[in-house]
Image (cartoon, rainbow, N blue to C red; front, side, top):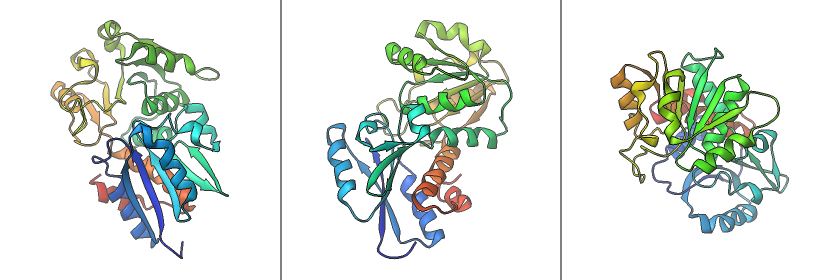
Length: 280
């Protein structure tokens, strides 16, 4: 890609924790692209304004979208990809022919990271904690590999709505209330934290999502925390103390970012450079 510098962004609130700028910066440099990547802290009330700025910017290359905007940005798009529509959330914005297309690379990134860790398509009983855009992508991905999926969240109504929104081909999704967790955990082979609980600088930095008791999980369970800063979250630390397998969010960050880069540029993402940039 030659010519004037193109600009890519992350829409987040807060944005200071993100490793996406250094990861994509390394990718652009490796590919020899005249492009930059900036994390924008965009409060919800300014989201419409920011999307309008993208529309009018001739140098706009694309954007990633994260908490809390993944669902709110959907009606601001001109088109949605099949993945974004099925998941019900957008994590990638791609300009095409004067229109903004909302895509979602989170589910693909989640599954690639899971496979990379040696957990492929064997029978999975999964508990996903969260009811936002990340949780929706995880549930969508797990249904694609035939997993039995349960969802729990602090907002019980939101968890119920998420579960009931997944219909059609694939396993049904159950929702659990906080009181159901203890009885469900002994059968869970994959526990996924898809919230920001435990994130550095977040409102619940030192907490466990739903105060989950990982000692109730079976010995062979995998605990997968999508938070990657810090890499050892309270949930990961508790799981390791129990002797359970763990996976942090760095691999998913790289894989979903790689697919976003491919959508923006049409080029093969330099995975090695992206991993090295974030310490993965």
